[in-house]
Image: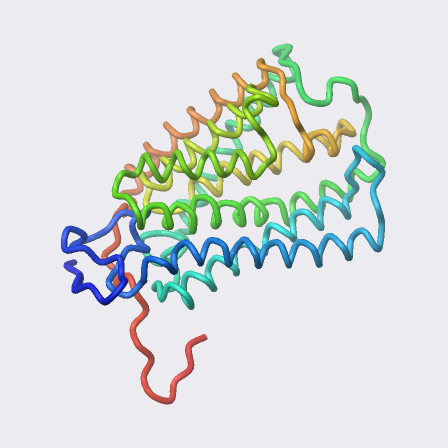
Length: 317
């Protein structure tokens, strides 16, 4: 549907942006001012840092994990500190940027649960295939010096099953959601949004190419595939599914091999594992695109990009 692209002073509106918009361009409209998208990204980051400090301080006051190890409580605190990114991103997008609620989830203004379920099934199957390759194909892993089950394996697995999917979603709402739309508000080329957010995502994990080229490539490759899937499917469902499946399988495996600390704080990775990971990401990307076509997912937005003004006397929840 055509949009009112009459620019207001300082807004990002452009007459060339009339018509349905792709996901990465949903913060470019006639209401959102250019300065708010950058300020919004820093606002989300500041809110996350404050929330993380509180959550991790509480965890440290209860139990401080020995260096190089992560208990179920430490994993829970880490996951909770990243889950807060979901409400923070939505709050900033709707209140500061005046974006229509739900447009961080997909171009349809909501999280599309059926496609999410299909993407999750495909992602889990590929994760299990990769795990089989690790176990029976001689692929070197991060925890090659460990053996046995972690003492708190039951707790770690419970925390993983209950919170790791939401933790993955939190990262996706920030990196492939708000940040991708922030970059997309400044440039039409989706590749710029994909590559910039992939680099920031990799750096946010404390990985630098001169420190560990292999692990940098691993994280960067995931960021690129996840970003492209957001553009090609019109929402975060595929990237959330891939990220969640990877984290859930990784930490269950880590609990069973007493290597949770190694998995969470990895600073390097063997090339054989990285090659397997990249192949898995690419395979999921292909499957997800085919699923999106079969499900006929909408990839451009036919909704108003900004929230309608509230009627007098009403409250916006």
